[in-house]
Image 1 (spheres, helix red, strand yellow):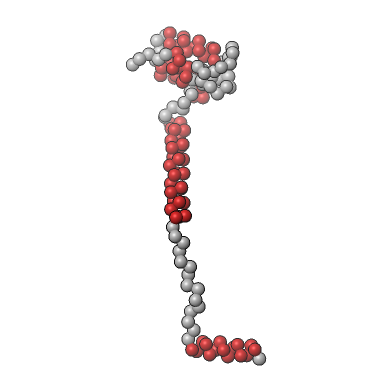
Image 2 (cartoon, helix red, strand yellow):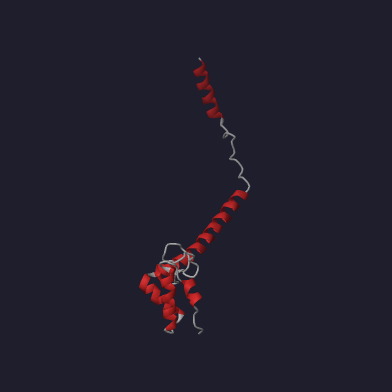
Amino acid sequence: MKNATQTEIEEALTCQCGCGLTVHSCNHVQCPSGIPLKQEIATQLGEGKTRAEVLTYFATKYGEKILSAPTTTGFNLVAWVTPFAAVLAAGAVIVVVSRRWRRPPSAPPDSRPAPIDDARRARLEAELDRFDA
């Protein structure tokens, strides 16, 4: 396994000054966080530690918030899976909705009245005659 470089480790850690950039990309002059972190990385690499050991050291010391990418274990797995699941769900919704929109409209129900038998017709006419009178 090849040894990690200073730059690789700096890219894997987030600067704690609040800029939101990696330690390597932090562009603050005399950054109160980036400069000590770079020195600490150099010390860790000077002791012969691997990339994983250095990242574990920083995650233990500062918490997982220092890692520029969440780990793929435990609850952090949700951070990796959720975007893909959301895209798949949105795609499924779009497919279902577009199929419903493309369907031809159903024929309207028959609006003709039901046929009336002779007995009911006679009763209806008798009631209408009483109503008119």
